[in-house]
Length: 433
Ligand SMILES: [Zn+2]
Ligand SMILES: [Zn+2]
Image (tube, rainbow, N blue to C red):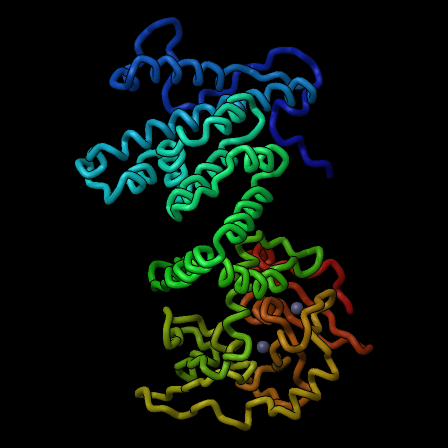
């Protein structure tokens, strides 16, 4: 089935003016000189600009590709100029104590909160505003549409860095030439290379302070553990290098969004090779998934479901503490249920990786799944074990899927009976290996 075109304007090929969309702007535009109450306190120039912008946003735009190319470029030039003006105003604002009066920690903190900017964008605005006098050629190039505001901000930062080192190394003409020819990303790289070439010691010192600024916080809150952190370029690269291969789509039927895939990848990374440190404390009822059993405790997080405990206990690389009646410890990761190293090697050789049809995760990223769980009488031998990657192991235990051996050498998957699961955990297109 064909999907309907997304968006109303781009698909049309006629010049017929379109019906105005329902008003989505916060303030209703009031035409022809009537004072808009919400903007009455701002400067008349800002109020006039706001009126023009709102009128522009409510009017239809041209639809032809060539026309849009012209209009978009001009609109971007205007946005860049507005950003520059906002930067000059932000720099002046930073020189006042208004942010303090309004209980912000700094001008940048105020800009982040009140102008809804990221910390980087807010800092760029103040820096550009403060340094605008020292980069006149670049300002002119931006006004002429040759470079963007992001280029200008990078050039201003270079001027700032050169001023801090006290070296007379800032060559605006040369930098601007590069900015004209490079995308923002490439130009940022070029600036880094140049800064290193001019002053490797200073560059190394900045790198060291970025490492000192590494931070990572984990906070248990509503729904799970909240993550917040900052990594230096090298640390960030190491993390991304480790995560990217794990975050790739796992076959055509993998509909997880990138955020979700990265989330899954970081968990997979953390579990890899460190499972022996994972401690699960559960009652026998929980492990057997009895209906009124309590959840299981993890050492450093919120309680988890009995289905999750079964999955973790399935691989047997976790330290599990089973509690009997009155909470006495009855089992601490009994070794008879553990897949021994030789057995795991044999399993790796036989299965080579996740056996879910269509999955290509290698053996070292897969868990040994008991087809019949050991808590239900399944044995820990090759006949009852199959390698499954973290995602497919989860789909079997929590997603309600089954993996069963076929007559031949492969496995087939059986989807869950409940639609609730089907909408959350999709299997591959092919049902048989
Ligand atoms: Zn399992
Ligand atoms: Zn898999």
